[in-house]
Image 1 (cartoon, rainbow, N blue to C red):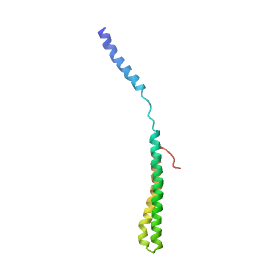
Image 2 (cartoon, rainbow, N blue to C red; image 1 turned 90 degrees about the vertical axis):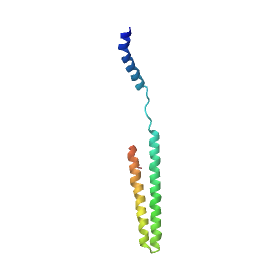
Image 3 (cartoon, rainbow, N blue to C red; image 1 turned 90 degrees about the horizontal axis):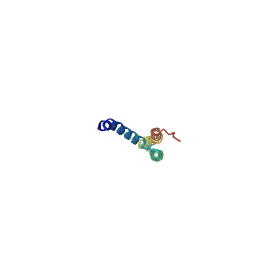
Image 4 (cartoon, rainbow, N blue to C red; image 1 turned 180 degrees about the vertical axis):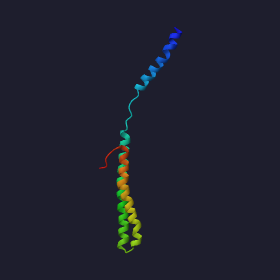
Length: 100
């Protein structure tokens, strides 16, 4: 009896682990997709605001005749456009979504 139990015990243990492995559920990543959509929306809005503010800053400086002081505003507008385009595209690529 004891040798039979020693022979069957490893098989029973393996079957028990197999059943426990099948019992686990699948993971739901819908919350991660929602979070990434939030980040994408933030990148779009923040890029638009940065770009718009840089253009306003540069426009005011140019209208007053100080063209050299307008250059940082133009670079700020360029940076905002980069955040708007590349930032949203990169965030969308992380979840396999298309940018709309």
